[in-house]
Amino acid sequence: MGSLKDAFLDRLIIREGGYANHPDDPGGQTMWGVSEAHFPALWRDGPPTQNAAREVLWKTFYLDPGLDKLDDEHLREQIFDFGVNAGPSTAIAVLQVVVDAVPDGKLGPKTLAKVSTYPPGHLYGIDIPPMVSLNLAYETARAAYYARITKKNPSNASFLSGWLSRAASLRTV
Image (cartoon, rainbow, N blue to C red):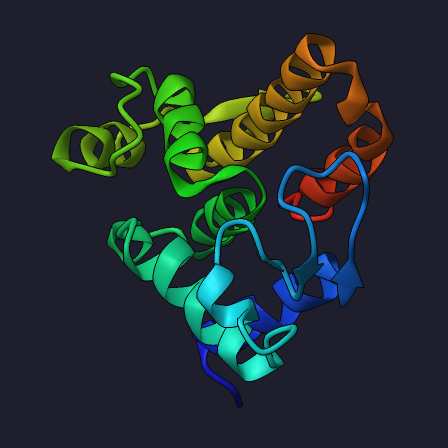
């Protein structure tokens, strides 16, 4: 059985796909989720290898933001995925809004405490555990974020359906 790192990265690579160079994407050329605009050193000799992409993605979007501090594996994967798409600070700030913490984009002790005390929820009259409730709330907040940035910048409309599908693909229920 593979590691959590490999499982997260395998699924992320599938969602990201291979090479892309969409005219409306400010990241420019992208391979395996690694854009030339944000990681020019990896693109110096052409597109990065999948192994190089996996290492930089894991360090930049999982280890550096401290996602390993979160107890819930599914929430970690959601934030990791969203961070690759929108930046780790944005992904964490959205979590902070959901849990009613100060949205500073850093995963500190106050945010972690709010996550660990998130209340249970109800879905179709059924009680659901706190982490399932939080994961659903996070997915909804992520969708709202995409809608806001698309309204602000209509050129993002070509990405909206894919972003929403991507967020929904991580649903816990």
